[in-house]
Length: 139
Image (cartoon, rainbow, N blue to C red; front, side):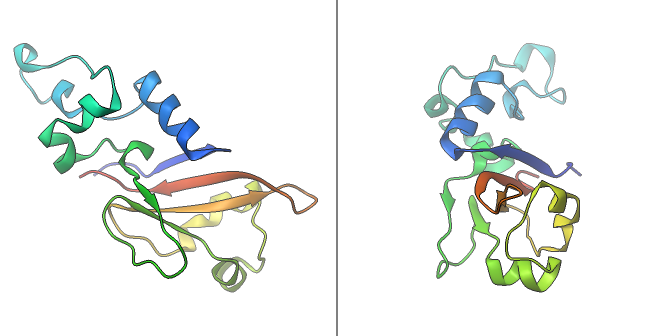
């Protein structure tokens, strides 16, 4: 079983680029379970990464697996992220404006495998500061 992925950023595309460039993702064709001679170097581009069929099946166990942040009327599906609504935050954590102090309690929000969650985190004055992503991608 994989550990939950939790990453924070102020801009999702920036985070995706940083994670890819740092190699901070599971690379199925370089995994330890493969014989040494069959391990491949990491792809040079995101396009190359997604050309590998096993990546579609196993995922990268990172924000790279996220293609769409859902709108309020969208249905969660593979490779999507569902935003915690103000109503959900109020019901489960007692506030509409989440902060970093609430992050340890995010397990109260419902989630599924291959569908991430995200929440806007606010500063002490109630201004949005960052987006926190978490969930399980990959198997």
